[in-house]
Image (cartoon, rainbow, N blue to C red):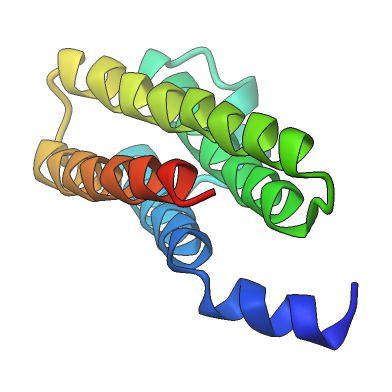
Amino acid sequence: MSVYKNTNLNQSVIYQKSLDIFKLSRHVATYITGDKDVLSMHRSGNKSDNYADNLVMNAYRLVPKIVEAECEENPTLRIKYAKAIRVFIDRIYNDCLQLKSLKIDGTDFVELLQTELKKLHRIHRHYVKSM
C-alpha cells in the first residue's frame, strides 16, 4: 500500500469509526465475560460468552472490509465493497440485540455500542453516497 493511500485511510472517518467500534466491542465483551480472551469465549458453552465472541469477531472483520473498499481502484468494485460493509454493521448490531436479550450486566455498555453503531451507519450511508 502506498504512503498516499495509508494517509487517506488514517483520515477516513468511516475507518476511524470502525476502529472505535472494534475497541468498544472488545471492551464490552471483556466486561460481560469477566475478562476472557476470544478463544475462551468461543469455546465456552455460555450464551453470553458466545454472543460476545460473535460481537468481537464481527467488529474485527469490519475494519479490513473498510480498508478493502478504500484501497480498491475499480469504481464499480469500490461501490460494491462499500455497500457490503453494511452487512457487518448489521451483524454487530444484531449481536448487541442478542446480548441485551440475555438480561446480563453491562447492558448500558451494549446500548452505548448500539449508539455508536447508529453513528457508523449514518457515516456509512454518506460514504456510499459520496462515491
